[in-house]
Length: 227
Image (cartoon, rainbow, N blue to C red; front, side, top):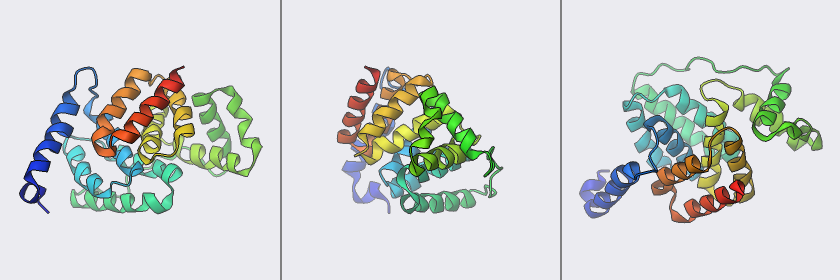
C-alpha cells in the first residue's frame, strides 16, 4: 500500500521526523550501520514486522552487512522467544532472496555442544564481571542462560560483545516491561564501552519506531545504571 497516497499528511510529518529530524539531531547522531542495527533490533522487540519489512531493504541498499542482520534476528530468540522471532526470520529470508543474497550465509558459530557452557560463562564474565562465573550454578534456568543465550549466540562472530549488548538493550527497551533486565544490560553496555551518551543516542534513533513511553522508560533505566 502506498501510504503517501492514502495518508499523505501523516507520512509527510512522520518521514520528516524519523528520516530528517531524528537522524540529523545534533549530538544524537550514529553511524548508519549502528543506527540500522539498533532500529532493526528495536523493531523485533516491539514486534513491528511491517516496519521491519520496510526498513530492512533500505538498510541493505546502503551496503549494510547481511550477516549483521541475521545475527540480530538469531539473538532475538533469547529475548523475545521463538514465537515472536520467527516471523522476522521469515521476512529476512524473503527479502534477502529477493535481493539475490545466497542463503545460508557463512557460518558464524564458534562453540560446540561440548564447550558452549564454558564459553558462555566466559562471555557473561566478560560483560558483567567475574562473579558471573558462579551464576550458572544457581539453577537450571541460569545454566541454560549461560549455555544457550550466551554460549550459543553471544559467542558467534558477525557482531562483537559490545554490539550484542547494544542489540539486547534494544530488544528489552522496545518490548517494555523488562526494566530490571534493561538496567542490568545498560550496565553491561557501559562495562563494554557503550557509555551513557551512546545509549541515549540509541534511544533517540529508535524513538520513532517504539514511541515515547518506552523511550522515556529506557532513559530512566540508563540513568539508574549510570548511578
